[in-house]
Length: 147
Length: 258
Image (cartoon, rainbow over the protein chains, first blue to last red):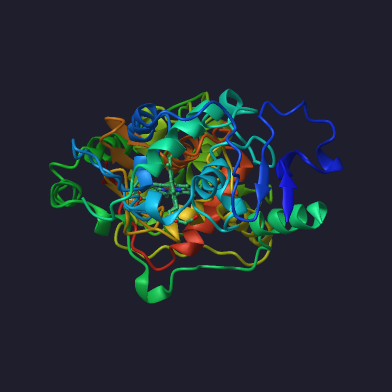
């Protein structure tokens, strides 16, 4: 299966402005080609722990030396870098409904096919392409299942 | 192929309305059950519950003359403790005259403007919250029982579809938190089943009383969704679905929430 920016394809959206997203390629269950410069794991960690920028810790427990409060709606992320490849993590970050249509996880790099987005966020992805790469780089460092 | 997948995704996002309450009746729990011991105590003690201030103010307003004809609510409805007891359990409900679904707030505003000939109260104003908290508190302990037969049916179906539809930049539906993840924690807050039985409620985060609609707007802005004006029919329809979904739970207003 090959999908190129699935959500911008299709004539129903012919009127919408050109997508602000870097085109990406979904192959199998992964986006293997990076969508920006190589990610920086340190920056990635900062993004993940930032409650309002990424909201990851609203739902996930992540390894964190400062033990900030976190949610448990989603599986803990410890060990995810050993379980999944960078390509799979990238796809999961870009739009987790491409992995599982019933996913509860927000699509971090998608602007189309969303319903009633508040005007301030309309047409913008939650994270930009570089931030996606940074987060993927940090997730890849999470090799240990428990701390 | 692409088109097929697109269609499949769209259908996953908008399931057909089919009278669903996902949580089995034996598991239905008030938001109260998800509070910590301090907030539980605060809600249960009328002297400590800050919502009591609004209820008391509502009781006074009930008897106060207002508007061109100098009439009070009591002039038409008598003693609220008898005439308004049990009224809140079936809101929102269809107004027989206009055929429109109305929230309790909308009904209070209608009486005020048409019967009392008084200027309308602003949504979330102290006076409107006081009147709706007072009237709702007179049904405390009584089970919610929304009527979804007859003309309310259409509103119910629209409200139900709203509950299950993903929206906002975070692409989440009400059901993702309140059906699928209640009991878990989001950041450090326990997610309840999202029932309306405590509202109007005093919310610590606001340091004031607020309507159910204000609470719904907080959830909607949390998922970065568009916010509609107060009193929009979409919200009243949604509130009807919520009341039906919560049927059987006792009214708790004035609730206390985080």
